[in-house]
Length: 257
Image 1 (cartoon, rainbow, N blue to C red):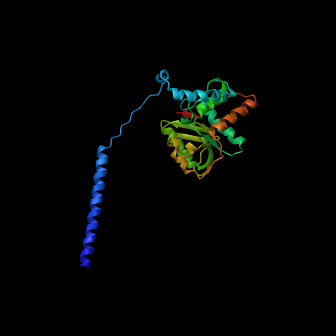
Image 2: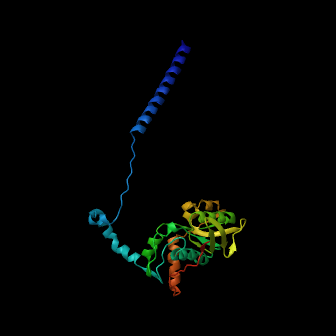
Image 3: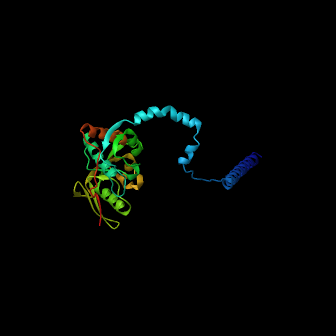
């Protein structure tokens, strides 16, 4: 009798388990069948200015005078408008070269600099350079980083640029024929596969952002603990202190044959 009850109990537990699984599967199936996901895109433009939200406007108006004062501080003068254009532009060259100078100021040994066009959100107008422009251009809170990486990966990055589009670089020259990388020089010398190079960039790029995944092969990543935007502000202020303007030129860092 005891064996009978033991067997009966085991069968009962098995039946309950199967029922629970079946019930759960039915519920999951029913939820999956009734679940509907829809998306839409809402364009936010000047049409919304005609109907401002009173509560939101009150919050903005409360802080706007103070923010306008803070963001209106002039830190330098731009000799000309620095635009953002592919494959090489005044603002991208200025940013890449500024990273080289910033490394010097921080006494960080580097071979070249690298940035991304996606991190330059707008052009820099000619005339007074305010903090406002710095927050517009370098709007992301990206950190400066220095990576040490083998030359073979630098060349892979050059191959990627040849197939897609080059990104802002300092101390680097690219020669591209068709969609093939013909030459890649750092400080005037052809990149060598086994040599180690130190590159100053931002943490987004160093982590493989904008499909630059090859950079995740870096052997060393150093973090000085400085925001790109703060470093750029300090650099422009250093130019102003020396009586220099914010300026750049195009010098065929990327050549197409």
